[in-house]
Length: 93
Image 1: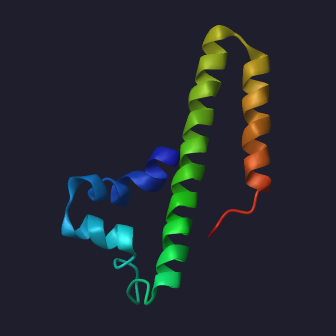
Image 2: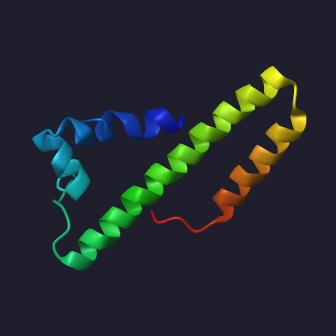
């Protein structure tokens, strides 16, 4: 889930395309990108928060598979607890 949440647009950024730079800088959004340094800071914080959250979701999926393969229910339980605690955090949106 996390992979598909960020891959399509985010993959353009490391390719160095014009579109990728516009995504990173917020210029691909309807209405244009940030208008001042404060808006840019907010945009980058939101982007990073989204990427981190999607990374955590992806890692949780990997741990779930690993726990099933190792028949380790405690590992899966702990991973789920951590993920649930992340959803209780206030993320930039």
